[in-house]
Length: 299
Image (cartoon, rainbow, N blue to C red; front, side, top):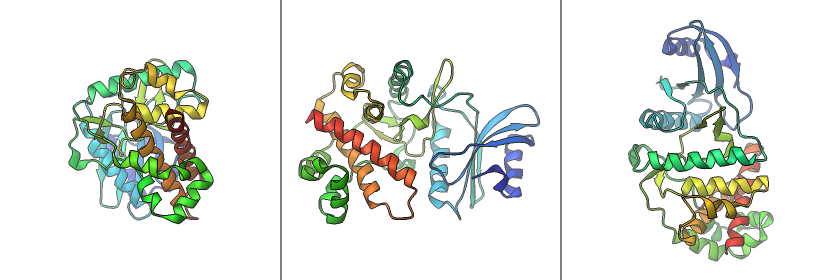
């Protein structure tokens, strides 16, 4: 959504929120959101990053924003996330104002040094967020699992078989991994930790977009990030064997996360209707298959 498309009462509300008129706004194109994302410069010289969505035109996005407000308000300062400056919710429009991060997304395919920096930050994040500073009641359920349900849905199973014949032929084994998985833990996990939710500056790593946070095992975010690195030709097994969150872990725990991760992504992609954003479907398919490839080698 472009800044110019915002209703005047919303831009006025944002200016009141920030205490100064917006003199310049650069809408951020791309991404998977139906809402607004914009970098703004204010009359007092300050800058901010604005996210906004309407409950009328993008109800799911507005609900994500509401949850992100609740999570962001509770994140300790030590967490490498942009600071929430302020927010408002008038029942229709939900607006978040963050400090602007003058950084960029990690290069894709991954550059070795950038990946090292991000994996180090994941460890630090797990330390700071154990135990979780956010109560479970306001968090989403983890976006994991789907293989068990897929086993009983011939249509979805057929679509998944087109993507991965191996998964379809081993669905019972994979479903057993999912059903017996242990997600016990007290760590606040980001829940959507992929390169497109990471910002790099010259000396820091920031993790953005927290609406899908959940409480679980310390290794959860590390495993999903490592699996996504396989799309860049990086061997996730070598990463896991050297990372402090995974190197001494029971191998079954990693397999369970991979099965749950792939199940959610591939089932969601397989169930997508004709109106679904093809970019989201392609992204979920690629990430799901990346997890499956790693899991297949491990099994």
